[in-house]
Length: 119
Image 1 (tube, rainbow, N blue to C red):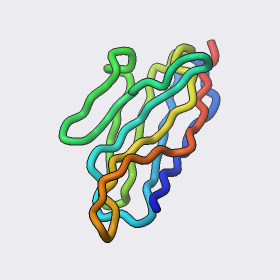
Image 2: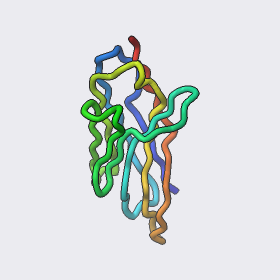
Image 3: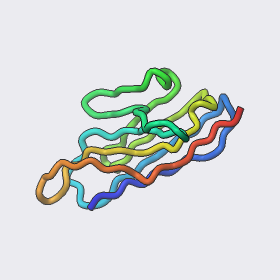
């Protein structure tokens, strides 16, 4: 089994910064893509940023958020700058994992971390 655990959420004023972290653990052979999604109250979950063969960002965060990975530590980060109230959401880590020992590719989600941006 594989677990994804996020940390780093919290309350911040508009214009501020936060850094989210996500650690993958368990029976992992390798990790393909890792990314971040978010879900605001009453809205569908949406992509924020992904890092696999290439990096992709939602238009709404382009230039403000930066995704990075530490493959040796099986971690992905999301540096969020110039935060806006509309960035308020639960942020979820997501990963495409090749599991050990059978090499099965599966997708996993973390439990989410709350980010609240006050105006």
